[in-house]
Length: 394
Ligand code: FES
Ligand SMILES: [Fe+2]
Image (cartoon, rainbow, N blue to C red; front, top):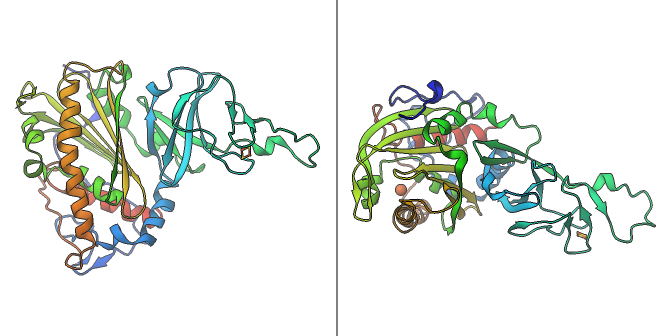
């Protein structure tokens, strides 16, 4: 029996709609009328939300330049000087373990003339040296040396430190926030760490064992939409639907900025047999991260949909396993994800993106079953409510 913190779950499946500050929002209307906060009545988000570059730019400002976004896992920074370059939407940042063992994040840009400082990932022995004119920064971001700057007037190196980015660690998962005034991660995602502790007691032993990156020809929200609902699973994912016992929901927790579901497994298929009734866990984190833990040895699949223009996104996947090495069912899990259901999902979302640009489509409906959250489209409606609240400034 797992050690389950009492506050990690709601009792059973239930649909709750966390309140968002929507006061100044006019719900957007399309050909089927205005979006409603009642999922049972509402038309879906109008198609222009997926194809209009003005809405995309607003999303970058209102969501990705202000919110907490998954950027990596602590296991990627085992030693002093370990760094990782990544993106928060259109902004390049890097994360670094400093001399005191703390993790820090900075914009990946030199304060001299704007060259990017680091690439990919690696280990720095000492200092961060810009490849353009060799300005040199300490692990604390301070400017240590600017070549040939002795004769410059009114040059205060203290004013040219690297620009810091906030970083939060939730059960080893790292989240960055570009907004210095944003609320703390723990305040915005209350109880999330408890759901990890309850669902994944081995989480602190997990490390990144494999990574996948996909360039997808679909707006980031189309991919998040698809991860937000299980309605399509029995139709679109033959093998995955054998790993899941469709309709056997177990426990859930739904908050304003995340949802957590635990369902029970079926028997699997040849190549990935599982003990029927084993837990299958999933999380969706506002705005663009989904996590899955499949039956078998401890594992966590962390999936981030990074916006890349209005009609594209990059899907980054960190596949975690104990000690960062393949465990018993690891290859079967990696294969189920990479060659089966994620490949199936990519074909789906690219088709949907083409459809959203069609003159024959504007809005559909949410198929919602009040008794069954995960296998209906309740989570999809919640995501769209959260999106509209964010675009309205909430
Ligand atoms: S741009 Fe970095 S040293 Fe010149
Ligand atoms: Fe899917």
